Amino acid sequence: MTKAIRIHAHGGPEVMQWEDVPTPEPGAGEALVQHAAVGLNYIDVYFRTGLYKAPSMPMTIGMEGAGTVTAIGPGVTEVAVGDRVAYAGAIGSYATERVLPAEKLVKLPAGIDFKTGAAMMLQGMTAQYLVRRTHTVKPGETIVVHAAAGGVGLILCQWAKHIGATVIGVVSSEAKAELARAHGAAHVVIGYEKLVAEVKRLTGGTGVPVVYDSIGKDTFTTSLDCLAPLGLMASYGNASGPVPPVDIGILAAKGSLYLTRPTLATYTAKRADLLATANDLFDVVQKGAVKIEVNQTFALKDAGAAHTALEARKTTGSTVLLP
Image (cartoon, rainbow, N blue to C red):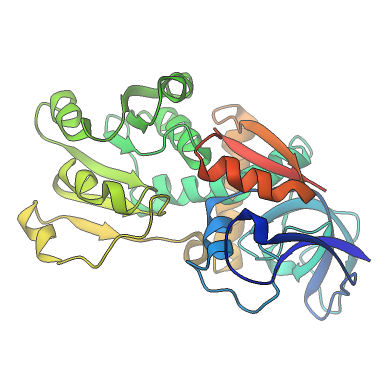
């Protein structure tokens, strides 16, 4: 038998139950992975509460993990038994072991441990596509990063600084401001109420070419107001709730702006893109240009407490769940 966190109905952290489930067997194209660590992400909250639709009930949530391949099904060529692997974007990671498509697995380099691997895949690959593809951040640019002390935020700050950009980070407390500064944010704004004025001051009134916004409803208009004409708003999360329907005329009025709602799933749908994204991430981590900060760990069976801390904005950097 395998242990897993399962939910039978949507709701608060209390709906997550630690249960015995049969150990799955890999089918064609699948691999069985024994988890050493499981990543915690805000998307897990969305599935738990029902903001994102569950494929079926009861369900095991969780989108990323790292561990060892213990069995493979027919036709698997991407990995072999014994390989150290990590993945993101395959729901069902809150379990001691699980089956998933082998094409979603990436081999972990020897220099990256399981905790780091589990903490970095979803957040790190999200940061990669945001700075390399959604908007190609260039040396000398000034950019805005919301939730700059969060998991994706800390990686974005470091990666953008490594490229040569100036980061204006937005956080909710002085402690988080210190963390963001320590990870490459040149300027930090506490609370988004003063953000537009600060951006205008720091850019000589012109605004920025891109805003990376994972907050959603509460910051949507503020983020648009930070942009220079023809600027891009990348809305990649909704920690404060989903953005309500928008009159697209606002984009014209505020300077012929661009708006995108990107997802990691789209950017890594092709195996070649997944490997390129992961390898770019592994490269900056192994160089030391980006450090993955695992600032909280919880036992997997205590996933409810981890969700409570995440939703209360008590966490910084990455959190991992240990089976």
